[in-house]
Image (cartoon, rainbow, N blue to C red; front, top):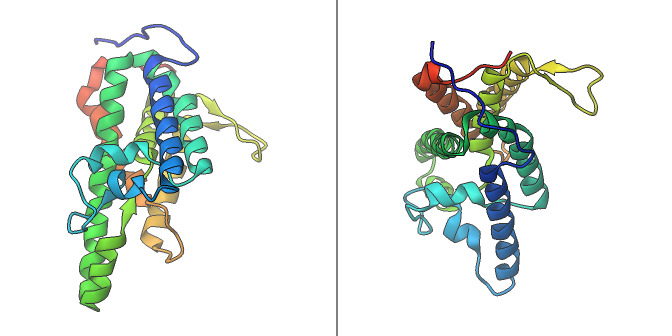
Length: 223
């Protein structure tokens, strides 16, 4: 069996560092330009293809935009916490490819579910359907982040994860399963007040799982 061995250890490996910097700079630019009447979410957030604000580059650019500071902070903290271990294990090139592909996979599942919602609305009101298509926008690194979580759970299945408000550690493999189940339940529940793209999160996890299975024995699993 061929094994993929860690390329080295770094507290802040190169790709993770650059992702944090790019996301931070775009968040700063977003808040700076808003006062001038330029809204980067309109240009870089992912819109439905019938929207007047849709551009093909948004399938990539939406991964680097965030709604607010807490959205940015927690996503980047998680990218650093889990992504550093994966990049140290796989190397920067493979990690970046995985990050981008799971982000695209997340966008694909989000798009599929959004299309379903718009179709269902069209059966009730064409005006509501058009409004949903025009105003729907997704931003954030969460899809790729959930791909990283899947990779962490598969590469380090028995590594304990600690939470401030949980009195005992949870093994990574169980954490990923529980989080995936929560995202599925939340997505299916379709709470009107919930503006989180749960199916994008699921898409990142699903595409991450598929990629790891396709790449197969080239991965080194640390138990």
